[in-house]
Image: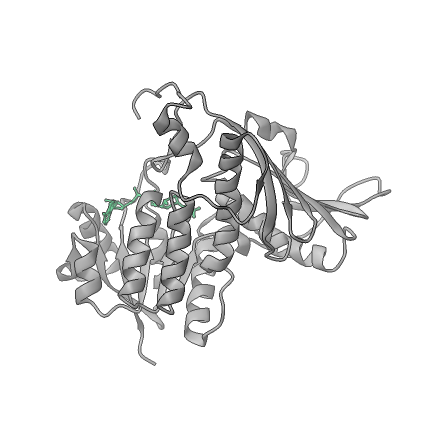
Length: 363
Ligand SMILES: NC(=O)c1ccc[n+]([C@@H]2O[C@H](COP(=O)([O-])OP(=O)(O)OC[C@H]3O[C@@H](n4cnc5c(N)ncnc54)[C@H](O)[C@@H]3O)[C@@H](O)[C@H]2O)c1
């Protein structure tokens, strides 16, 4: 079997200290592809910073002659099967659309999907129109605590699912993982409406995108399950990363009680005096192993012609709630879906002067 030829757009720089100014996610994608070396070969890279591309090529044994400054040239000249996109969010849509139009077979793009609802939709449409598998790195789905939580919910461990709550730093950059995980726990359903409020008094740019300082969002999925999310200071409202409550009990993933118990998943039926901790075989909620699993699944789905749960059809469901929650704050009211806007309401409110965050020094 011939190997899939992969190209990278954005090679990053392996950081001493990963943060919102650079994680070097391409290095993690490449390590995951390297683990699949019988099936995938990295043959070319594109980066506007040649030094990043050179260091990447040295580490992952890609010939320097296959470095491009302009990714369009790479897409035109190389016959790629796979493209990995590891740039900041505002570049995801133009790059994914160009790769889809170049008719590669699969695109593995970093999260969040895009910098506006219109851009997110257009990426999905371009992939569909060109028959290309477009997936996003929502790798936390592959953490055993979440896999087991979904299984427990499906088996009725908490009765009929009624509510999912989560708490995170912000509802866009972190939120994309959390909304995606909540959709996963609720069987990949779409939301019906969203009601939210955010506070953005101090500039907070995460990979170049504005993220609220504090927020709260309530929504309902089409199957009637309720969603509730807190961000920033408000995250203290929930003593876990995520909680799912049903008619007969509840479970929590990532309970915030350090030292109490090492297992990141616990379940309790109503009437029980104590939580039951579930063995997750030493798996946590973060880490490179999850990216390895996500990329391995994506490549297997591509080769076997199966749908992949990381695909844009699912990512779009999370993105719709995210942009709808900012739209709810802009409209000061409930937003019924499907979402009928094109922009990113938070970015637009900053640009128009409706929101005036105090600039953060050094950003
Ligand atoms: N899945 C996760 O858990 C996770 C964690 C951290 C970051 N991320 C996401 O990964 C993405 C990338 O972030 P990062 O921290 O790896 O970025 P980074 O800054 O480390 O690397 C981005 C690279 O893109 C290059 N680049 C910029 N413009 C380009 C262009 N026009 N053409 C080609 N290359 C270009 C830069 O030179 C740089 O080398 C972001 O969307 C971020 O949200 C995901």
